[in-house]
Length: 480
Image (cartoon, rainbow, N blue to C red):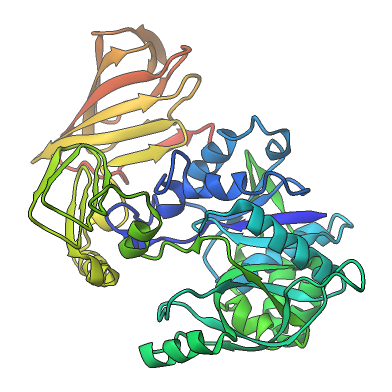
């Protein structure tokens, strides 16, 4: 049986300012109504599989849980697991954690390793490739999915195929699959042209399929240090709300390495199954423009955008009207707190802007103006010297932690819904147009006891307004 393992730990900084480390691209609906993580999960429909496991980091755990819950009309997703990495150690250790978790239950499923931020347009073709890979994996092969190249791409690693192998269920049924002759690094333009002309090379998709036990055997053979660290890390699994936690100190000692280097380049049992299914890893805005639906002027316009005599644009606006006149081949991204304008051929250089922001300690590199929390979200509407204004949304039944602040006072004004406010042990209910004041150092909590979202305006005032001025005494989400 297939056990889908969805890797959701990336930061997606090449799509800044849409994608940021605390809300990266896999959680954003870039190519449809669902986020890329949700699209990855929905892509499994039609395959016989166990409930999937999503591997993500601490910072994005609540976003991951919320997005999976939104899909739980599918009974198979109600048992989905979320495994937390205390720190990123690349793909080889992450997959090992999933494999150890599976075999610890006395099972040996086929691990279908997927990235949470890929686009695959042709689902039947994807399912057909998975079926071929399943038959190979059942015989002990470690399968990589190779994308059939349609242009000389320099941004991907490649897989060079060897001899053809049979993956058929009978002697007269042979699907297309090959031994792996070599994994190849990202080429220069001339080399990529030669790869494409030869017909022997595929883009390395970063998707794999193999038995859990076979992966662990190969990992132990070629990288026993990673094997031992991960084995120790899963020796103490802890359930925490919707999440599975591993032994942090053991995993911190684990070396960093990709599955390609640690296992796939070294094993003698690697095979490649070609995949021609409209795949794209959306590694930048140019790629996002390629996969999106376009208007008659070859423009992709998302949000309130008006265009005149402009073509080959990618324009995304979250909250303001954007107009273009007489321009072409541009990427224009307008979020609530940042604007990016770039030539479409230079969008990979967005990373240099991100590096500048990091050097300047700008919060925009990590956070959007609108920040999601397990209880809802807040939007930083305005700020100045000694004050900050936020719009806070609390989900029905949700509660913020019992907390206090050393440096700021708060004033809450309810604009919709009902709030249960606790200040120094005293409860009070507030409804629309009512307000309350929370002095500095007062122990307080906010809860939505109703059936509809609670909306309120929070005005903070004080000498220091940072998010780290929070002392939590109790929290239903385990953040104390």
